[in-house]
Amino acid sequence: MDTLFWLSAAWIVYAFVAYPALVLAMAAFARPKLASGWGYGRPKVTVTFTFVPPGEPGATALEGVRERVRDIAMNGYPAELLQIVAVSDGPLAGRDELQSELSADAKLEVLVLELTERAGKTAAQNLAVRSATGDVIVFTDADTRLAYRALEAIVRPLG
Image (cartoon, rainbow, N blue to C red; front, side, top):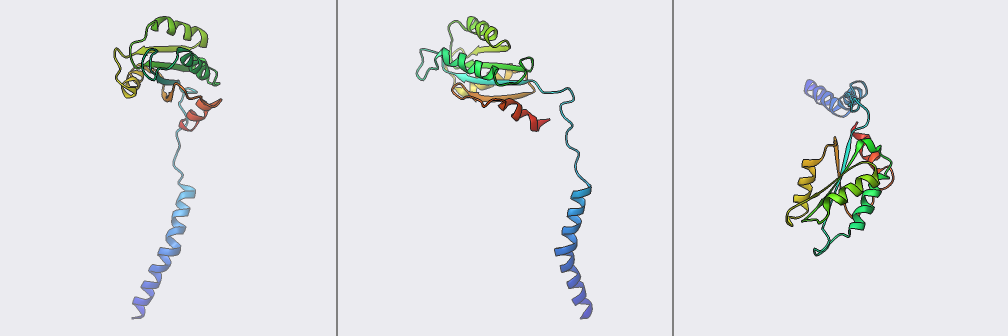
């Protein structure tokens, strides 16, 4: 009977004292190796947003698209590592001219894509992803402003 008592007491001490101490020791000495970054500096980031073309119900004014591109371009992330993909959920008259204007104004790579017919936000986002060249893709809306340096804050924990 004494043996059973001491085995039970030892088991309780192990469960409540020894095991937690062992876990803490392992956590202190056996830290997992974290990724050491991208291996080539900052990653390329693609920021994408969708908009409804003018003339459609719920349309986004083209000036709103221009403001959105300017806002993203002025976010503080290096222009050579930034791509903006704006997708129109439906046919957009003057798409090529708008793309040229936005690229020249923002001084970075801007793609303006269009769906041939209204298909919804998800279809527009899928088109944007197929055209994205960034290591990281950030989805946002045409009427949402990013805080200054938000892109830097998004990618920092990733590498």
